[in-house]
Length: 100
Image (cartoon, rainbow, N blue to C red; front, side, top):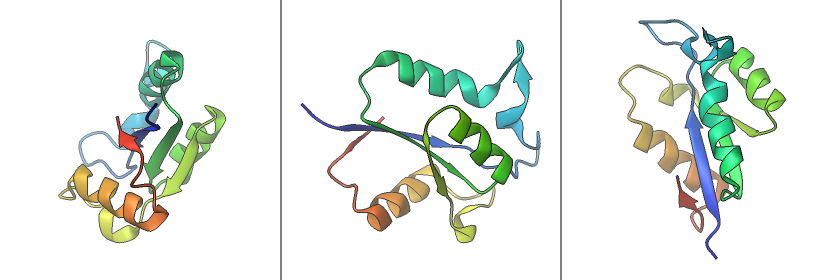
């Protein structure tokens, strides 16, 4: 069976809605919806939240998932998520995992 990694990009510096991943939607932070869905699937070996914000990191930790502090050079509005994932996999040598 393959090991599956769920990668949650949750940058804090959104220009349109600052800290949108912590904005409440029906009483729950937006971040929680995706994380809880992945946790409920029971098919993922690891969930990693990539963030540049300590408040998002705290919430991810409270949800019981791993937190990766995203490098500053990958924190702007123009950075493609694929570059963030590639940098994470290269740095952590997690290339044997499938990405969800």
